[in-house]
Length: 230
Image 1 (cartoon, rainbow, N blue to C red):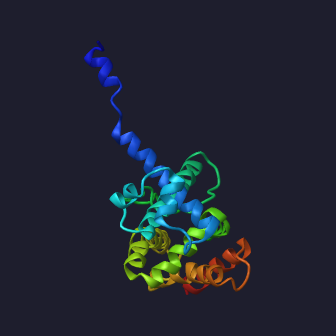
Image 2: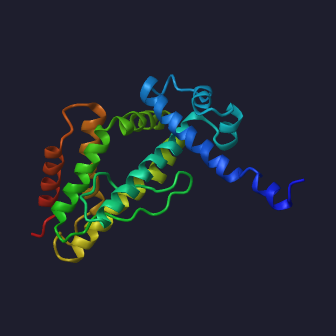
């Protein structure tokens, strides 16, 4: 007869099993959106791809858009952690900072501050260009953006959990530069941030012209010229 210790060692770890299922669901949702598009992605398809029951998904999320949002937050969170690890290791960042947890994102670490505001902003915008051009990010980002227009609740959650934390990082970095006398005291920093990221997003979303590092650099130069001390 097995001892209590041996029996206990064979007891399934529900927490570990749930995390494996959650990870499989995230991977399945992102893969399907890339492969077949948002409209043809279904909860049933995600469940089948992830190897879980449909009821498992509905126990954690009310809809496929909610699944995709959490999967996307997890994806950007991993990218943010990798970028932070690269900065701490002395490497150039390859992805912008973002929320780091799928359900309750923690505060992002912050934008680089090397003392050269233009260089820091260009590095971050270039990383954003790379991310938006990356197929892993492009399809889910477009899907969530489009669905957020139709579904105001999803759109509000997307803004609250992803966009606003990132925009605040820009404002914080610009505020530090303003306090150092590098920017005009009366400059509206939120407007300045929107002038940085708005045109970038518009060009990417509407596909008006190629999204490049050179374009990101030009945006930084124009915006900083407009808020420089006079």
